[in-house]
Length: 325
Image 1: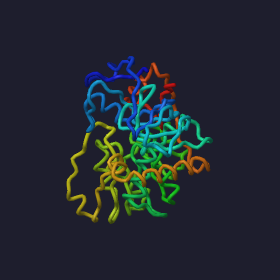
Image 2 (image 1 turned 90 degrees about the vertical axis):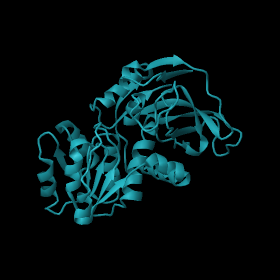
Image 3 (image 1 turned 120 degrees about the horizontal axis):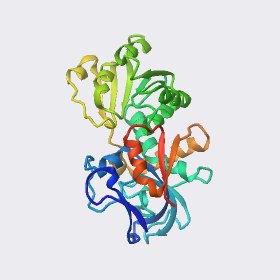
């Protein structure tokens, strides 16, 4: 098989597609012939040595895939050869085949295309876990989303609206904010032209937000935290800006704000059955057209490194996917 390989930490452009032996499953694994692999910020960070997970070399990035089961381990009973599936391996998705723990592999309903299936697990899984399990968002609350036009941000808009929240979407251009509005955002803030601090006050009638969803970090994090109202919840989702902000802890004391970490991957490891239920809920929402994953660009497999660079450049909106097979 062929795979996009990282042989040493360095620039994304150093990734090369090379031949590898086909994977052999353990008793608890299945082999998935990868149809599509979605691109995520952890892919860009991992190959540069900037992510918390550092696989042994050589490895293929790729946190999110869809495809067809081609081999089933001897202990696996809920999956069969030929099943359409999707899942989020820790890495290895930019390859024609991948061995995956069968517990993490979820059947994809026939009505959901394979490219959409690749764009579901990490983004909607993270956002559902953050908004439902951690922040416990309630109808009528106000949710401020930073980086709202990106993969997890766009998923968060749709899910927050499903839960009955008012959504304030923040992004860095008029074009990105138009996408947020199409996804259902109620109010829009442009980082480049609006003063974030005063705009939050204006849009919340001086009361502050109930929840901040932050997958970006960087210079807007402290401003957004200050924009929380009484007992507001600040969700630390990621650091796409590349800078981990240093937050004065007195801001948590003031207004009894809660700073809450979102480590979806570890939650999945600890709660595999709840993860499966969450993914079934998401596929039901997609099948009923209550939500629609936003895929804005599809790359060919030979351009997989360029797909990761495209996302890392912060040019992308919604989801970027690579067609592998």
